[in-house]
Length: 403
Image 1 (cartoon, one colour):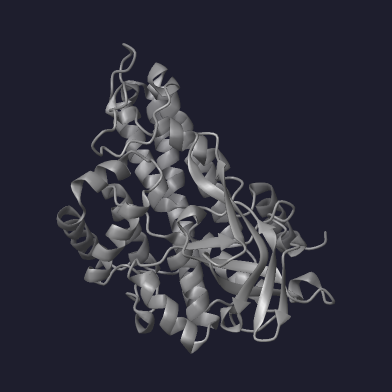
Image 2 (cartoon, rainbow, N blue to C red):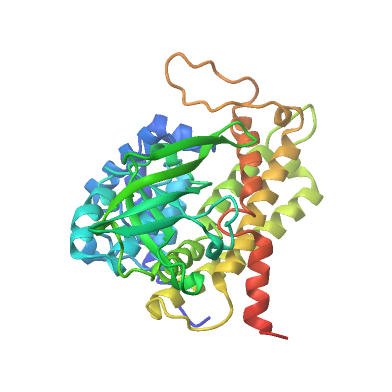
């Protein structure tokens, strides 16, 4: 790598910390530290606070209301927010929908949607995967048939994260069945409250409700819901997923999880000495820390390449797939260590706890709250966004070709 970290980042980090110490509500931060799923009211309230500061769309260009920060600044900002317990901002709107709209969308779409996303006034859901088309999106069967000035959408989508909160959806659908699948898919912006849309919740193994499936039956999409050109949806989705996977190592989250692991390691649990005093455990921490630093450098390399090439591929090293694999596996590894250290306390299930009036305080040490729920939920990190098995196939094809 030939990029040099800007020394001004230390001053920027201090600025972000000072802002968070004064602007982030204490009860919101406490909920964030417990690793439970974000509460919609917290997320949108935090977005409004960030918007007033001018930091809500940290990954967007200045001309569209963003900060114009480079990769390193964005990483510092996300790291400090997670460390402080701030809610995660709406990923689908800010990191997926927004960049697609300002890169490929019409002037009307830019003017209509970007301010609402930036201001924390709309929530977006992603409807790409289907029951038989997950990592292989080209196998999708949902269709959008052109009828006069509109399209008629029919199909079934699944795994829409926080879809229960969505005001709008980004939807991939087949508009031309006579061509190669990748050339017959289009990208749509769909009002989530349109007639003909049915949403059903999917409860994951930790009993949390973050996932949903959507059924579309003769849903009318106005012509202005089409993004860019008809048949270019596959290209737009690849652009979107490359943006997503540039962050898929989740360095800020892994750093926050590592700090929480260290907090638990200093506790005396079940009468045993603190784990931090054990040489074998300290060796594990040293190993994870070294690998996390290496992964951070890999992430910065990928993000800098992405910025410098303006979305065009510079090399065949498949950064997104590599980051996805290593980052997702590290989340699971740190979670497993926390569960191991908690012993009998880790065996208890702690339901989501917001500290709001009327809620019963969970039993056991405060450090255990949310650990089991997060550990169970993160079993899916090696599956969502394209399973790690698929990512390894992508890496192999890029490096080995047809060998």
